[in-house]
Length: 131
Image: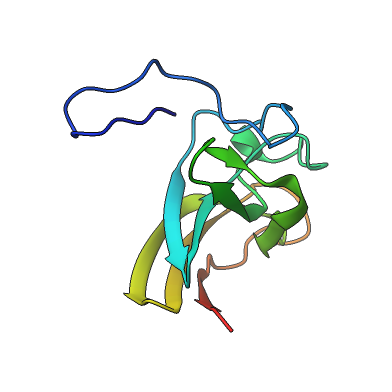
């Protein structure tokens, strides 16, 4: 990830990290910004979540609050937004509905083997609201 002040010039690219300095473990897949209330959040997939059996670690889908000054994910805020449910995720989209609400949609990609072999893919929807 990187940041910049004018949309043209950016700081050097650096790996996403948790606020304790540990690498987030996100790689070669999507991530999306979500703003809810006064918070800035990142929706992402990552390795290191007992998900080595999932192609490109594309499930579960996580959400974590980002410190806007350090651009680190606050580890204590990380939550599973969508569980894997024996499918890959990651082709997600985020939509800001209002200052206090955002939606995340995500399509499944079923594994060829396993508990859900032969089932139809699902499109999943999460509504996130600030209190």
